[in-house]
Image (cartoon, rainbow, N blue to C red; front, side):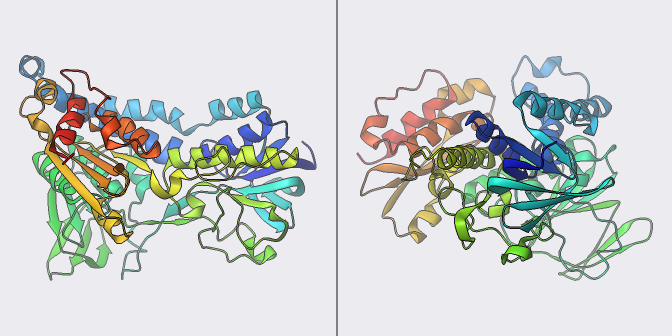
Length: 471
């Protein structure tokens, strides 16, 4: 191990790995500091295990939606096999494979808690003691985010689940209450319901997936109900008590008894214990960055951040997107090369502001990129939104019997380009990238007419949306 590197990265999740990799590819030396597992939240407690938990039930549901296939489905979901498949995707919570990848990429790994201890200086504390290393060019904060538990009487002593517990549990609880109707709440309700738990989803507002188009949450609610999930809207939790079971006192005066309770009520950046106070940056808050990933307010521009710690689009794929730009820009600046940081240039992260894609792996799936109609109007755009029932597309009818789905595009009428698109229905996740390309490329509506969807596929919904738009 060296005492100095060109780049030091705090956090070995997908974002940190990509920063270090791009820096090394650019001719620099790099070290990653990690206190937990190399691979981070996504690999062990988020994207990978959650989607593995959901996939078996989704595949079974897909088979049951096609006449001829449904007759062949004679058994129920194998819970042990599903959990075993989940465990395989997490490498049984061992990071040997990820460590091997770091070694092959020429990135040094320092195990321990990394804290900034001065300008371009990091102190790493582990069971073996503490050591201090310096960065010749940059320190990059990629420490991710963590679940937030609200301040509710009795909650701290009730051993509640967070998203980590929900994705790594070794057996389905008989009864599971989930607080929060966002992505994590909806996905985990779907996953554990298919695994046999009696799930109650508690939502303070009146909508599921409130940051998406309203029809998406409506269809997900129908899907969850069909899986046996009880969705209670307009209700919060006032108190929690655990003896053997958990008792939730609800805001409507009722009580709910459950075996486990998951609070899916938000996340916060992991910036409270990484030494930011030593350089005059407020701990515990999102790190505000410029378009090239530099943390604002730090003299000499040596501190960068990427991923969830910035609060911008806290999604694994967006963290990796930002990481590639940050690693490249650090290498460019170190070599004295021109930094291309204009909109949509090599060293900028323009998509963070206008073209963030996301898929919610419920049944039905929801896929969205860019702005909702409400967001576009609030941003001052003159928009025209077009919707279409995807079940009326021939390819969708062939894909699944009684296909239930909906699609919507939001068009900037001044430029006649897409600002956003949302799809809900079986297979919707595979429709999203075409919409993302259209948004990023600012493809004119008139040109989209020439992107002919193959028949008969679900993508034919693009044709129907364009036919509905007033050209």
